[in-house]
Image (tube, rainbow, N blue to C red; front, side, top):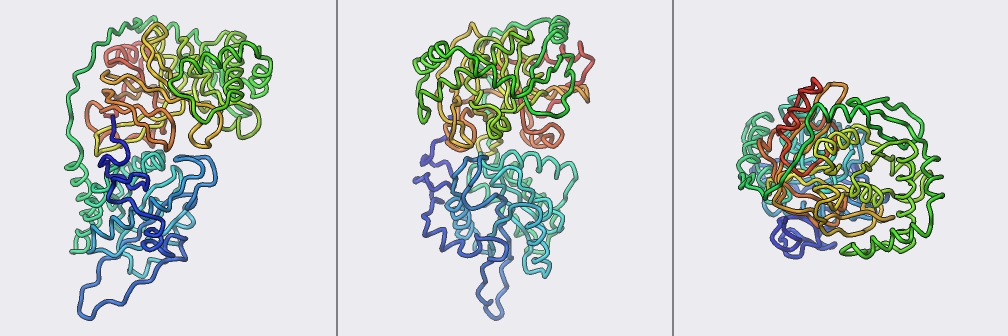
Length: 526
C-alpha cells in the first residue's frame, strides 16, 4: 500500500507533517508573496551583483481555477492550493539556488498567452507548468514559445489533463517539453535541475532529453509479477460476441446524439425524467431495508446521513426497475450533469456498486464506450465486474492508480468473496454517498477500452499492490504495477480519453481471441 502522509512520502501537502517540504501559511506568503496572486502580481527581483552571472529565471506557472477551489472538481471543492504551492516554491528555492523562480497562476489559455507575451523580453528562460486542476489549458501556449518547458502533475488534482495533454505533446513531437509524474518532490527537483542544460548553452531539445533520462533513471524498477492464484473461467470468444449482440445499454442523459450501438451492443437513450420518475416510485420500505444493509456491511460510514443513504437506495431500486423495463443489463448515467442540473436528486454511485455486486452493470458519467467495455468484459469473464476509473501514474512507485467514486466489492463476481468497503461523500463536492472499495491485492488485472469507430481494443495489465486512502480526488484508488513499458503508458491518452475499465484476471489471451472474433485490433498501451 502506498505510504501515508508523514511516512517519508516526499509529497508537498502541508498535512504531511513528516515531509520536509511541508510549510505553514506564513511560509507560503513569504515564499510566493504577490507572485501567487495572478499574472500581474509577479514579484520583483533584487539587482544583480556587478560582475556576477545572473541566475537563469524560471517561471513556475500553476494551472488551476484559483487559490482555493470554489466548485466541484479534482482534488475537491474547498481545496486550498496555497500551502501546496508554497511547498513547491520553498522546496525548489532551497534545492535549486542556481535558478531564480517566479511563481504565478493561470486559469487557462488567455492568461497563459499573456504570460508568454510578457516574457518575450527574454528575462524568463523557461517554464515549469504545474497542472493543479485537470483541464486548464496552460501548457500548450507556453510550449509554443519554444522555450524549455517542464510539465508536472499535481497528482489527484491535475492528472486527467496532465495525461491527455502530455500524450498530445508527445504525439506532436514538441521538442522543448519534458515532463515529470511523481509524488516525490525529489523527482521534481531533479527534473528542474535539467534547466542547467540550457543555462550552460544547450538547446531546449537537449533539456527535454535530459528530463526524459532523469525520469527514467529515477523510476522505480519492476518488482515481482508473481500473483495470487486466480481461477479465471472465460466464455468462448464466439459466444461472447453473440451475447454482446443481444445486450442493451441504457444511457441516461439530456438531449444529444448517442450511438445506436457499440461493439454490437445496443444503446438506448433514456431521459433524466424517466429515471427520476423511477426513483420517486421506488418502494420506501424497501429503500430503508437496502440502506440498513449498506450500514451493516460497510466498514465505515462517514459524512453520509441515513436520509442520504435511503435516497441512494431509492436510486438503486429505480435504476434496477429501468433495467427490467427495458430488458437491459447495463445502465450509465450522466450523474454530474443530472445532479447539478436538478434532473436527478441522488447520486447513483451506491446503486452502481450494488448492481455490480449482482452481476449487472452501472457506469458513471454516461460514458457509453466504457459501459460497452464493461458489458463485453463481464460477459467474457462470466460475471466479473468492470471498474471504470480515472487513472493516475506515479513513476516514483511505478504505479498506475485507478481512481473513481464507485466500485464493486466483489471483484471476482457475485459468487466470489467480498472485500471491505466504506461509504463516504462523493469526493469532488463532498455531497451525496459514494463508495471506497478496498480491493484485494496480489492479483493480476486487465484494463481495457473498446473503440468501435476504429475497431480497436486498448489493453494493458497490472498487478494490484494495494489501495491509496488519500482524501483528494475520487474515493476508490486501486494501486497496481503495470506489466511492460511504463514510459509507453504515457503516450495514448489523447487518442482514448481518460477513462479506463479494469477487470480482475489475466485476460491477455481471451482479449486477443475476442478481438479475432470481432475482426478488431488489440492496441497494447504498455
